[in-house]
Length: 101
Picture (tube, rainbow, N blue to C red):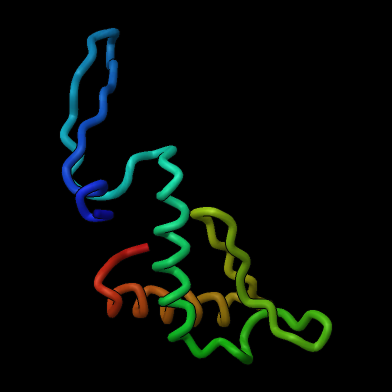
């Protein structure tokens, strides 16, 4: 059912005051309430496979390495080297999960 909702839908744009219907071949509709839920579900699966227990900034004895809200993510690091490592690992994990986030 989700595939049917996300596969092949149309959107309307109005460049120069002339309406054009565009076939959207992938992704989810902007503003659709399912969009952040799908993003969060995919992201949760990816983040569970990353070994970031010792990365991030220590807050009350625990490492905080990211914050998420809806379809946004912020990586938290104390230095550029750790940020580069986390981005590389995140990019690799997204590739192994057959998609891009």
